[in-house]
Image (cartoon, rainbow, N blue to C red; front, top):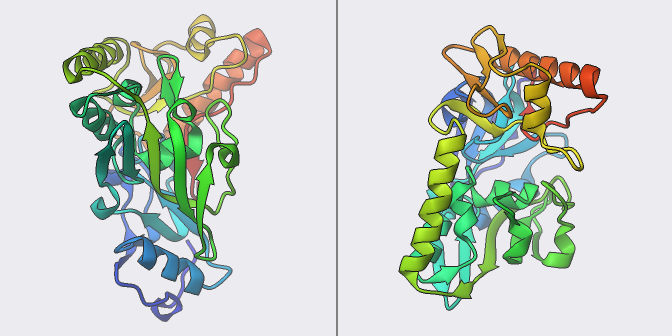
Length: 299
């Protein structure tokens, strides 16, 4: 880990924590610390920090770590985690405005309560709106791009940008916004419907997810992207990887595209297991599985 004097950090209204553990902030419950963890007070505080920080200071962002593997050496530089003040959700007609720290599931519930249809799929997407925007998250045939109206982001120099759908460059599990953009808010749109009917559909999706995925395990969600025309889980299963282990890391018996921490697996165990799966699928089918889980930090 690199070290910096405390006075190299610009003054902020939020909080800094040095050597902050990240293990308990990510779903895998594995990985090293952040050199500095910054929780901004609000969007202006975030912009002030980004504008004033030294240009060579590494900056990264984490949400609730639902699709993230933090390597055991931790993350150098400043890790930004948006606090609850960035998680507000409001409804105006059929439009939903959500802060980037809002849980996807909370946005789905707010839409359902207001009788707004079309956002039910978010109930089955783990994580926060910020991450969902970055990766065009989706499930059960719908993606963020299908409900997207606009988003607000702050770039690495502290400048604010309002992005329309054309600016996002949404493709399968990806957007093409610059890497230094940090989302702070988004607006989505659905259609009007009876709240009870929306809730019924939403709960059906949730029940389907719980029946087919290891949602109560220490996992990082879908591990690999589906290759064109194929399902990653089927390739993994047919390559004989169901239940495969590396230390305390295991390919889920319930859903082969999920890796789980069965106890005290470290990040190296989990990543090594994923690479073993990739190698076996490549050897059998000639297909390179692409990681969907974001892997960050120092091995």
